[in-house]
Length: 186
Image 1 (tube, rainbow, N blue to C red):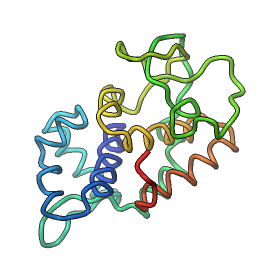
Image 2 (image 1 turned 45 degrees about the vertical axis):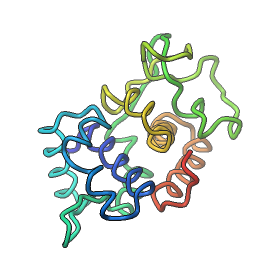
Image 3 (image 1 turned 90 degrees about the horizontal axis):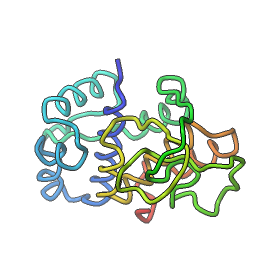
Image 4 (image 1 turned 120 degrees about the vertical axis):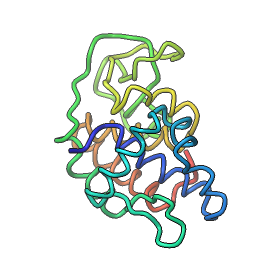
């Protein structure tokens, strides 16, 4: 059964591949220790998450190097059409945090918000006030602050989870570009 940290890990693998296409550079960034530091997921949970993702067909190990890679075609399909049913979300109380979904920089100015309050991941270091959105995993705000491309993809995932059809459609299109490595990095 998929867990929220699995999606965080897969998106981090995509971000790393987009930023480090060279296999030699990539190897040092996908060690269990490096993934733990960059995602906030413990090494044992990184290992379990990778195994779940491989079993689900959302990740694979490269034949020669053993480097884990996201199966971006399958991930795109799952995120675009299944994620909101597996990881539904409802806005919570007002809190301080990091903007997500249509309020995040990746979608800023592209959509008009229908709501009075922006969606945020609760975060003591956050500068925005808005409605709390439960992130896919507790370390999402911290991981997002370390990696602008990861932040963009996680915010787009939340726009799909939260948004009306217009917001979700735009988010799916932009997320597909990130998954194919066609984005400029957020």
